[in-house]
Length: 228
Length: 353
Image (tube, each protein chain N blue to C red):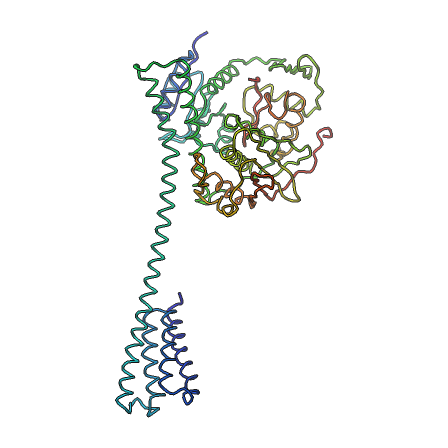
């Protein structure tokens, strides 16, 4: 398999250097841009497999650049931000960002997010069975097993888990989850979501107080992931 | 301070009133005693008002004394040389009185201003000291560790090297925490905190904070038994998370190792109540009110900290119209109670959709 190519758009040379060394030592090919204009040109002339995009760029707001890129670029874009502003993150995700990381972040986490994003973008065929840790979710038979044992879920719980499973590794915002499961008019009814995520966790997690499958992204949403 | 016009009116009124009163008793006390009483009225004015109204009342009182009391009365004429001297003396004393009193007040004002300024400078220095200490220590750790690792002449064992790496890591986290606190503080100072209310599962939130602090709390026991029937609360989860984080972190920093920190969340009427109790030494009673002040740190504590953590707790709690109280526990240790007014959810039964 070819080395995946990653474009870094960030104005801080130190961060670029850190990212480059880290990514190259993990067998990625790295291209760098220090501002939005250069980033756009590089992305257009030779589309990379993934873009790491800093929100605070000198010549253009990263959110705007994200929207421009999304007009034609459909591979993963991971946003980097220094501000832990939930609104910023939600708006980036709504505008098509694949994922986000807040600086300072652990490089292990960065690599995991990149791997997961690239894997999802390359896996275009739909799997009918999703396996995560000890969970086995059969999307055709609509059944869920944990260590081989059938778990009984209500239909809403199942729909929620199936939506998570189809988006494994991806953070899903509260609004998106509510819209998909309950419908357009329920987008503000986050208490439904809290309750159902709670009961779902009780059924699938080893320890619902320290969830490993459905993790909370504070103020943003939830992420279904392979347990670490 | 009174406004100008009022000052003139009141001081003139006071002199006239005194004169009228004296006019009725002059036969009993004699006109020379009246001079002393009028001087007293001038002194009172001097304590209360600016220099000009006081001068005016000194002049006015002298003329009144002359006109109404010094024989022959109802003329400005002064009969004897003795009375003439008295009148002159009165004039001089009244003015000296006015000027001196005013000067003393001016001096006191200046003194007060200087004290205020000195306090501000002291606060600023405290901030600079604790900040430069709190920021420089981790920076020094990072630079020092990297130097040691890079220096080819030192013989570092694998263990020592790993230790230095984790020192750098810890220092990085510490810096990040300080910056986080400073940002929160400046958001509070700027008054731009607008709580974003949303439904929160506080049990989950507490577990998240405990999880985030797992490294820092490895020498303590954190006890939290979630209440089964806790409703969801409509609060700003981000603010509550930082409040809890600061309270628990504070308890970890200032209580002995191997002690218990217990957390409780409950609904009390229309409030969400969060309690964080520790088994430390508690706070000196006389300092309990000061604990939430900016830059406050117990003198006896040597641990780092900018003294911002608890004032952020207070600021964030109040931004959500809540209140925070601190009390010492009878069995020892301290207990912080946060009470925030909040909507709460009625039961949503998952099995009936």
